[in-house]
Length: 190
Ligand SMILES: [Zn+2]
Image 1 (tube, rainbow, N blue to C red):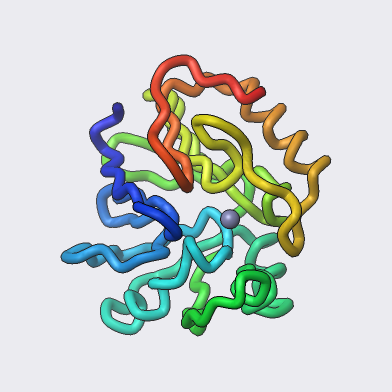
Image 2 (tube, rainbow, N blue to C red):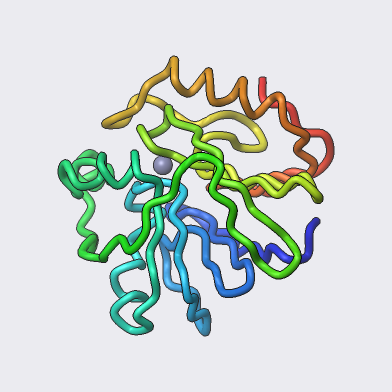
């Protein structure tokens, strides 16, 4: 595993989080002692962002998501986050401070994580790819034992298939998915 990514694997309902330097990728549940400068959201589903409002209120951290996802989220936060769909009460009042685009590079130490737009699970889902280590943080697009669902609000099965095709062209040695265990070895979406 690339030691720069510290996984915080979730049990049950909430998404996995990943700590990379001052960045935190996804924040469904609060992680004791972690005060990020920036939270990057792979997408806006509540199980990935339910703790963001509280963390931002306490630390003043930035919150980034893709432009497409921000547009989707702002159409109606409860509906787009799937909180309505699952009938969950969550705080979604955080402020998005930057929108990300395809190809944006996020530097952490000597590593650069590239934003890859992988829509389908939601309209603006992203993955983060670090080419040197072949590390992919995939959100709910790709898991070790399957792919994300496309039947939630804003989901699009054809878009998801195209995103998986894109990922299959990349060299992925370490997979850091939004749920479930980490993947290692030559990972090939299928
Ligand atoms: Zn999701």
